[in-house]
Length: 297
Image 1 (tube, one colour):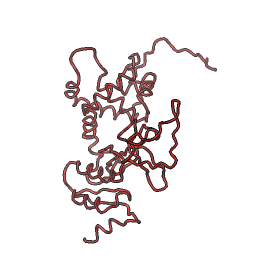
Image 2 (tube, one colour):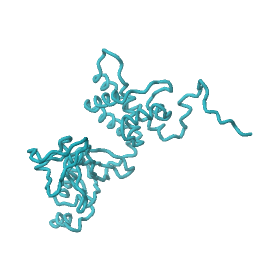
Image 3 (cartoon, helix red, strand yellow):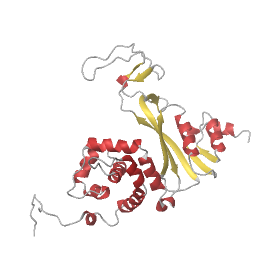
Image 4 (cartoon, one colour):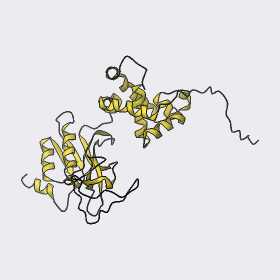
């Protein structure tokens, strides 16, 4: 018999959020690990908040929400709050009940900045990586390093001479500028909206963009990120950040480090050996730096 297409549901629901999430859902073991890591940071949370005034967003819920934003590539806090309003899986993971109100995006961002400035977010990730269940997945001997460009939230029109000698943009909210024949360089120009952004191109024949550079150190057994850095985009940033990430690894036992040909320089290879690391770097056929570094071996 054909069912009825009713548009309104029941007034009350007697199914718990816990019962709506499948027992084999991948977020279940993650939630257990996260809760154990958060329990070790209770003292850190107490130091960040005053004992007077109205209760703020619980830092445990805030950090769980930030994990969801990373897991599901939610591009903004506003969209994340929208998802929390109707997504039952998100509500369960964060710890919100079906009838609990969600937060205003501005309040969420303000409290997020408090955790970042207090370095609690970094301690939380360290606690997760040091969890007993995750330590079994991490390799302590074999790593890979790489960098990528992260585009800045700054328009090319904002990249102006530092002495403000050029003509201003045309009228209107997004006035045009004539860049024809203008040589724009980081030592003479800077963005008026993001002064730390740098003009950089990924390779020969690629367009130059205002950007930063992100760096990741991954272990090779399970492909998990063990360290990360954000730096200004320069020609030396990848190799300098990689050296810092490797140097910060606990212990001084011998490790191996894989990298692409951008790291094939004599200085980087020698620096790795000083850190008791064996380089596995793709050969730069135009430079052959590893062969030069090994010539005296």
